[in-house]
Image 1: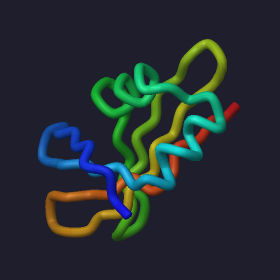
Image 2: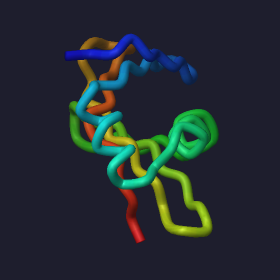
Image 3: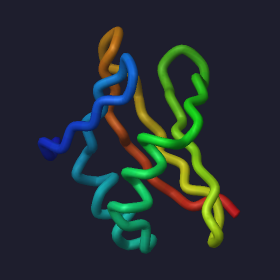
Length: 83
């Protein structure tokens, strides 16, 4: 199930899955960190079907992993901390 929260950054339109949002809240990653990661962080292309948005904060690094669904659309499936 998808929640209709969409961000656009450059050529990518991102949609967040409900699972990613609930898991991020459980990991104490809040919207200001997620938004900052997506808009200001680095974009890494991993393989042919994943994008990673990463940004370092005082507590650690936030990673938003997105699966590419179409040529310029991606769905964020995981948001996690990296130390």
